[in-house]
Image (cartoon, rainbow, N blue to C red; front, side, top):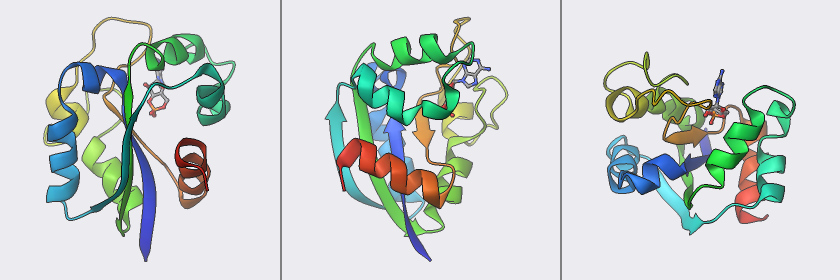
Amino acid sequence: MTERTLILVKPDGVKRGLTGQIIARIEAKGYTIAELKQVSATRELLAQHYAEHEGKPFYEPLVEFMLSGPVVAIVAEGHAVITGFRSLAGTTDPTTAAPGTIRGDLGRDWGLKVQQNLVHGSDSPESAAREIGIWFGN
Ligand code: CMP
């Protein structure tokens, strides 16, 4: 089934000039870029986006990190793109994310309170619909 997912190139990816490489990997896998914009997130927007993490020890550092520079928000489209992009991204911790993935090839642990792991991808059709609404409106 053709799906849409919300992808964010996080501030570490934008600052390091990796946006192009990340988009190239999405396109090389055969997904389509349906929407794309660079945005400076607000606290309100991030509170919605990360609602499920509120109260966790990394929540505040995560929000500060996401406010530390612009983010590139992308809606990607394709058959099974939600699972497919998470596979391309690799597991959350970039230290152990598999080589060949975005996080495994391009990310690393900087010894900070939050895992700066370059990208976000929606984890389910429900999250994708919710997150696309948050970042792009309905
Ligand atoms: P993401 O999966 O996009 O959304 C939650 C983010 O919180 C995650 O990426 C990491 O950037 C960060 N994160 C998740 N778990 C931890 C953790 N245990 N310690 C620090 N940061 C984390």
